[in-house]
Image (cartoon, rainbow, N blue to C red; front, top):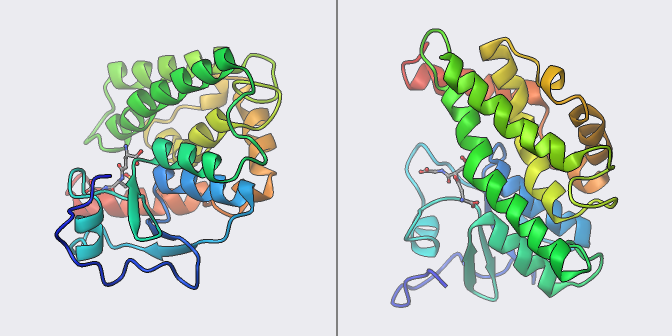
Length: 233
Ligand code: GS8
């Protein structure tokens, strides 16, 4: 789709018939792809990428436009953008279906997926990247964004439905970054979004999620490292 057609791929072969994921363990976008693959019971090879010490030729050639992970390589063809990859994985294997069964439900799921993509990770970054005291606007923006999601969740078990589906996969990986935001800004997400903790627990109890989403403390360690590297602390 976004690959350069005149480039020779040497690393692109599927690994023993399995698709290859260019991965970064702490990336919520990569986590989504792994959760979807696990939920579908599909085998894959996750290849960790070093995003700081120089990007590999394979990554640059497979995602020349954004130069970001995740990239999912199957049959020698790269797919980019996590939400698109998750949708393609769903089409590859229909069971269990990730989007809701009716077209209105699917449209709603896409609405929330776009909302999450546009808002949540950047709002987290506006806090954990802050030097000194976090501005009240950044804090309020983060809370307001999550409150909308909390409203969409309501008292249902899962965001778009009563079953673990597409929007949960898109959202749950980002929650592993909330602890870092809470530490840096001394806020508690559950105070503002009381339905979140039980939804998170429900999702994290699923094997497909538990295998992938790192301990929030590990993410925080990395956040502190990023802050040092970027001269914030
Ligand atoms: C975002 C991927 C992304 O930001 C998606 O796949 O959904 N919209 C894309 N990937 C990050 C790692 S997670 O922060 C990345 O590859 N960053 C490297 C860089 O910015 O150079």
